[in-house]
Amino acid sequence: MTFQDKEGGQRGRTLVDWRPEDETFWKDRGHAIATRNLWISIPCLLLAFSVWMVWSVVVARLPAIGFEYTTDQLFWLAALPGLSGATLRIFYSFMIPIFGGRLWTTFSTASLLLPAIGIGVAVQNPDTSYLVFLVLALLCGFGGGNFASSMANIAYFFPKKTKGNALALNAGLGNLGVSVMQFVVPIVITIGVFGAIGGGPQELADGSRLWLQNAGFVWVPFIVVSVIAAWFGMNDIADAKASLSNQLTILQRKHNWIMCVLYTGTFGSFIGYSAGFPLLMKTQFPEVNVLQYAFLGPLVGALSRAATGWVSDRYGGGRVTFWVFLGMAIAVFSVLQFLPQDNGAGNFWGFFSCFMALFFLTGVGNASTFQMIPSIMQQEIPRLHPDIGEADTHRQAEMEGAAIIAFTSAIAAYGAFFIPKAYGTSISMTGGPAAALWCFLTFYVVCVVITWVFYTRKNAPVPC
Image (cartoon, rainbow, N blue to C red):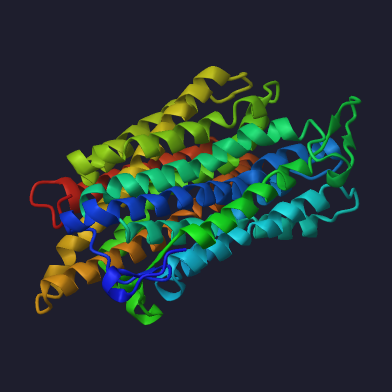
């Protein structure tokens, strides 16, 4: 561990001299430090998403090991991690300036051990009640909460010219945890990975065996390693400190609420579709082994987010966001054409292909909306506070931009609850998910209009 005095720019693990917009400073010291923090943050966030969404796979297998729940009960279990994760994000949004990125990343990553171990224990007991599963679903929300604090933390480390790409990498490769989970869990639950320590298998009706507890246990060693890396490898930034009251200023910012709507359209869709995709495929195409394909949607969305941050940095986040929402509306309309309807079998591959396009667009939109937020605040703060100096203006814009990034991610995360629940409600009331999908399509059209009015039309209030 390096200890330097204030003049050396660092005290313990706290950076007391942090000037990423200074090109000389960035080249000499800043880039290396910021990159190290980013590459520790990414696996922590990947694990958070894995634990948050692991319930979507576990739920799909509960009936096979003897837990007899209705379709609506199963969709409730799939939706609850989204509800708790989104709610926790509201609080996590403000934690970095209060506790520091290093301490909070360490603590929040360690909290993932509770649901990971809890799932492993509960699924082995055939007498586990539905209430216990509801509680475990809510605890998985710890993973969802981590995104808000992680993004706020990384936003402080990078200059404006590379902030969009850095946030896209952190979020995109973090989002990859959903796909990693949906790929890894179906494999590890078929083998006794941990031997006698992990417990015995569950016998299925066809004579095969599952170790469903491995869906939780498999993450434990990786969580422990990431906790250690965060504590010893990450930094706090002294200038990033702010009280809760200072951060709550964002609740008065009109563009905070506008971006909440737009990010709900992109990330809310990504995480909601990820949570509901396995069960949606299972209910609409029961003849398909959905766990062979479910991981591909989140994989496409995560990689497109990580790979396209530079597009928004170059062409403008607002422009990219406008075309993303237009494309998403078309993709949902296309999905509707391939659903089983009027006693028809539907077309799985047409349905699946359109959903892959939808996942891809959510990833691009996730990157573009987050690129917009710092740009918006850099324009808004000088207008709102014309009496403060340049340095204070920049500091205020950075603080509010980071807080808005975290807060919008909190509101958008409710998509992980509402989309699976909308599927379940639509199926129970109408016999299929089409009604829910029509609602999603309408929302994307509204987002197209909002983006055009505020950010992309000629003479837009805040062009970006």
